Length: 160
Image (cartoon, rainbow, N blue to C red):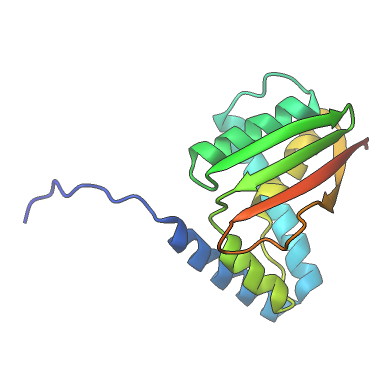
């Protein structure tokens, strides 16, 4: 058998599978509130690592969100993220083809905490680079579904 076996890319369905198992286990063991705190911390540590990997061109919150979004697209976490600056302190974020959509829907329906990996990573980046926090409002008329893998949110940005 040859040692030159080509490397296989991880499929998004596998990320969804892993996401569900981790989130479900943590939520069952420690409860939804502690799971949310845990995943917030995951985002903070993720930002520490991301900050070593990418350059943030400025502390402008829109640029920070765009930098994190591009990283997540490049890594295959989602197919596409579109950011639209509505006002100086408002951004509409549209997500297409999120790899963890099925697990997130199952977790929410089951009363458990999803990882909200993108959200927690972006929250940490906004806090550390821009001194900003965000309030999120769901703008999706239909609930995100495994079929469309689409969701849209409005983020209102506020100084910390």
